[in-house]
Amino acid sequence: MSHTHFNKKNTKGHLKFKERELIEKWLNEDKKQAEIARLLGRDRSTIYREIKRGKVPQIINGKKVVLYRADYSETKYLQNRQRSQSKGLKAFSGRFWYKLKKAHHKGWFKGKNRIHNIKTFVKKYARHNPKEKVPCFKTVYRYIRENALPIKPHDLPVMYRLTPRKNKKSKPKGQNKKVLGQSISDRPPQVLDRIEFGHWEADLVKGKKIKKNPQSSHY
Image 1 (tube, one colour):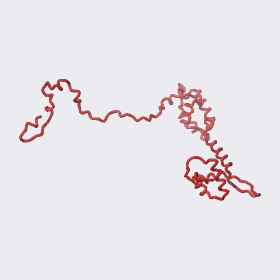
Image 2 (cartoon, rainbow, N blue to C red):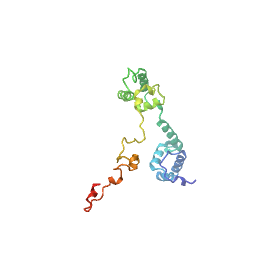
Image 3 (cartoon, rainbow, N blue to C red):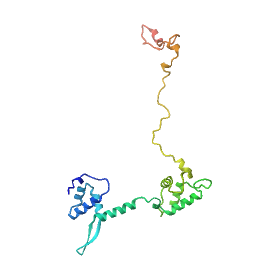
Image 4 (cartoon, rainbow, N blue to C red):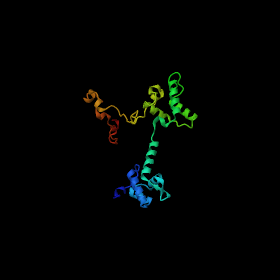
């Protein structure tokens, strides 16, 4: 079987079961971890952790030995991955959710009896129950938006004030532009027809001042 397709460095993604089978095969052939990493295109640290996880004690010819087994490592990998995934509300203290719902029914988050918002309630509960796993207030808000709790967004005045941040660039309030005056195209008809004195372009031109023509400076 050719292994050339594994030679390219592959640092992303988890090991596949086919790779674990190859690790078991090559370890039985007394290949070193560095060579196995090169053949699979993986980091040496990845192979080291994989072999350590997949070792299982066995009895061979009356002797106890520790060997790597691909199926055992695959089972442990799947179990660890399942534990690492979020379990929703069950991932946190059940007592916390009970107290949160009870506070909601008492009207502690809205109306005349309001003494808390979600953030202050979570912080106070976590401070008084340090051994319990308590979610952060943003996680509680997320569950409320997902309708995972009997509390609704309209029950919490603070949620309506927490407007999402806009990604659009804000427009400047003013314009950094100089206004030089009225445009020539906006001149009245009597100016365009040059009927009246003083509406000639030459009246506004200042000529070059020379000694022979001192009046040129009066334009």
